[in-house]
Image 1 (tube, helix red, strand yellow):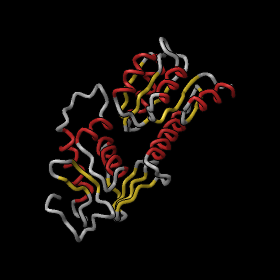
Image 2: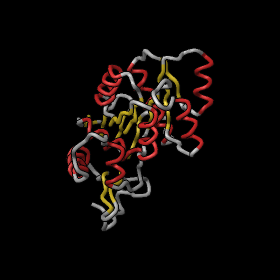
Image 3: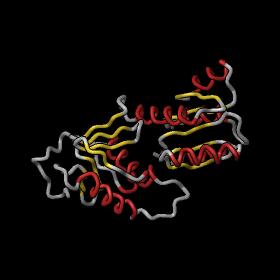
Length: 235
């Protein structure tokens, strides 16, 4: 999933970005309010991590503008301002969550995952598709009880497909949510990782869960796509 980190303190930026990337998130960074505004309006982020005290435009002003303009991206405020009136102001302005610095990284990651689940109206941290189970908290995958070992990129792709189960996702959608602004790969790499996933998740199992809709994109088999009914456009 793709995150925008809005923070101007460079040592914290480096620490948070490294931690988020190790956790499997694609991370873009903005170090002032103007840069954050441009990025939030031009990219569909899953979560924005927003500081209040920023150069050029402060976090509360930014958030108020975004909500006023209909930008509904989940926002987690991460700030040194921990007094109750500050928390109330942040939440009442439209923040979905509020954490104070210094922050425990495990708690930050858990709250981000919770916001992503909320965005997909998914309360259970375990995503299921037939005999496939994806534990989004532990970042583990099992099929028919067998552990499936995935790389961080493979896991991120499978999780994205699972959150959109039964719906076609285009290559551009996958690219936009799984790759950050610094990634030098081309969109063709999506097809490569789909093939990797199929070799691990579908090979040796029945039915195949990762489907191709030719000319459209990919999808994880939904309840309306029973194994006994196969479209000629599926692979």
